Length: 79
Image (cartoon, rainbow, N blue to C red; front, side, top):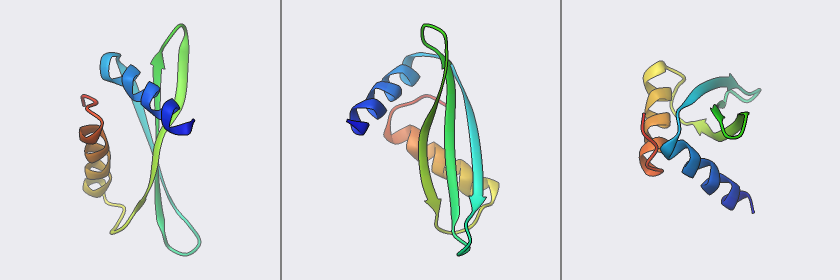
């Protein structure tokens, strides 16, 4: 069911304008976590969590951008 919800969200993002919000956090054991949220209009304003991932190397801006760009390319979402 969760996979279907993600597919529906991706389908909306492929054709609609949206705003992207990123949140990077470090956990107790020094692991970095990246959360991506999107806001878009679908019969009213909506906000959904798009994905979360662990950052394996560091938390530099370039690393975060690469993670987001990879997710968007894999799912055919235009930047």
